[in-house]
Image (cartoon, rainbow, N blue to C red; front, top):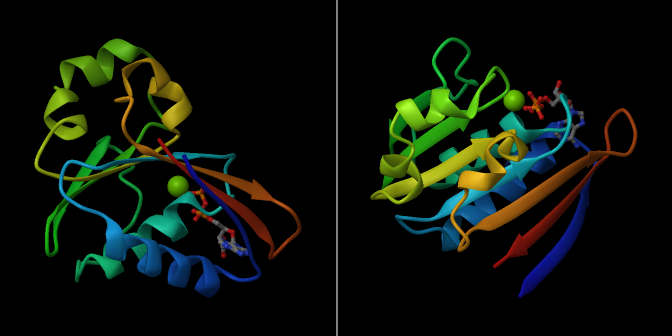
Length: 140
Ligand SMILES: Nc1ncnc2c1ncn2[C@@H]1O[C@H](COP(=O)(O)OP(=O)(O)O)[C@@H](O)[C@H]1O
Ligand SMILES: [Mg+2]
């Protein structure tokens, strides 16, 4: 299992980290992001999308659960913050995203942990101080 722990000191550094790790991402990969509000999940996602060549301005999907972008691959950005019942994502046809042809990034992955594919990358983000975030990457 691949494991790495990084501490970033600014949103820009977190975005840069996202751009860097995205270089080894491939279609079909699920990236599960864990961590509280403000820990940098969306910021890291913006970096990943930029690293995958997405030109759109990436924001968290707020009323829909899923945003779809096109970079060098298709990118699905799922934010489960507002998910109340697992059935909501089951009804959305999550298999298409979790086992699909794009890179799938999931914020608040803990809310759908039972549905996450076994083969994935988990990234845990922790708030250390106002500008410091601990980012733990684990690949299974
Ligand atoms: N090192 C850092 N990495 C990422 N975000 C940071 C960092 N330091 C401060 N921030 C701030 O923390 C917030 C992270 O927000 P966001 O990425 O939306 O978090 P989440 O999606 O986890 O709720 C932003 O306001 C950002 O400016
Ligand atoms: Mg977010």
